[in-house]
Amino acid sequence: MNSLTKETVDEILAAMDSFKVIAQELIDKLIVETNQPKKSEIIKGNYDLISNEELLNGEEHLTDNWYFYVHGEHCMFERNQLRILNT
Image (cartoon, rainbow, N blue to C red; front, top):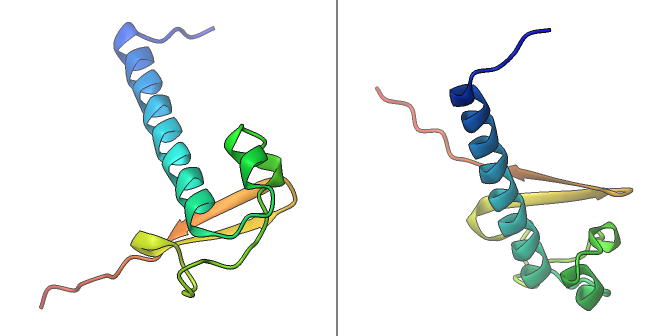
């Protein structure tokens, strides 16, 4: 069995913490910017109640160009980024 160095473990844990922060920010954004019928339960952590609801801003995406899609118990986020080519 291979073992990881402390440095590698620390990097992995830091990456996991970063992903957790980003995920929570996106869930909070989704709660605030959509018309979730069970918002109070979702805020309590019942994320399986998140559904594909209309955005309150009337746009097709959350702020900062984040799109979301709920399928079953999974919520996927994707960011539409502009790509600028240097010429």
